[in-house]
Image 1 (spheres, one colour):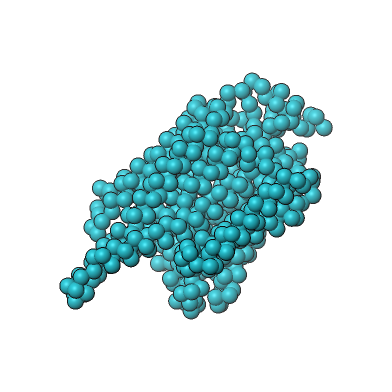
Image 2 (tube, rainbow, N blue to C red):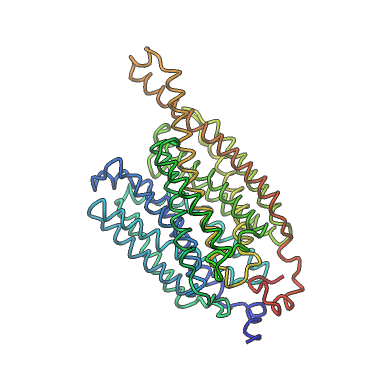
Length: 509
């Protein structure tokens, strides 16, 4: 048995790079599905007769199920096996996507989106934790997580591009059907090439009270921000949901401190470096999701871009993310401590965000928007790669799934908060500006009224982007202050001792 425990540290899986292809494909499917439906939503709403009140649920149903069940999915992967959970997640996601594409009414579509979220919550942490246990050598791990980080960071923008193409040239239903070939290829590849180290399995029983508390707590939190966007921050429903989320999540922490086999061992999040990653990454995603939302509206409504052209406009940001993640982050990760990549990365992204605060009614894309997007992509890509790796740094194999789930949870909760918070700020700034600048002359002229409306909209967007800029600067400060891990290969010579102790068998140090 001791020989088996030491094997992953000395003999890496020979098929790990092939496995990365299929793991990355599955992750791309999950990440782009958070945004691909956004552009298709107006067409789906018209086709199925979805009311304006129910329209938001096409997005929210996915976010609630995904964000609420991620920790549960991560622990299931630890208990049941990551490869098995990965394949089940892929299969379920494909079936839910087929159901969504074939939806005949609102209920069927919303149910399909919720099911996508459920199976995504199984799939995403299983994918990341498979990487954590398959890539054990520092430099290889840096390359693998560089690729994974680029996919995780750029997937949302790719979703906007693909959503625009499919909606404009085919049909909104293909934004669902497109997941099926992704899932089939990834599942077939997983069956053929992925081998999970057997010693990483968690043999404890499932913490049912923890599952119920954290799931209802996270759902309450995400839903509270959604209701704040529609009902206002001071409404009874919004306040009640925030209070419920606080009570449920506090109870969850108390339960986890006392149970024998916790769903989320507090050692996973109380580690200074992992805690810093979860917090700073969640904050950065708040700012980035706000940018996706506002820039999409700005390009289409104010500048008159088509859905496809809007998607293409985001391509430089995707290219920046891939470059930052694979060329900058992966090359420097084994040479410098993670905080010297994450903090500067978030700051570079904030400079890009700063440029985008200067948008106007006739802003030049090449002169202002393009450099802003490139800097955003470079910065986020550089920061995402070490963040993904450090999030599973030093965890015991039995906790790899839940540690991975925490990365996804911080992203999903951050995305929900960013969408609701920044949308509310933008709407409030738009209304205030319009009220203070409205004139009788503008009201009498349709052209002047339209220009005034657009100007107020741009003011609202730029105000919210200023807030995103501040959040990114704060994320950089958190990363620099909390994260103090050294270079990943600093202790390469002690691999044998680490294997013997079985303390950190996921990494070679």
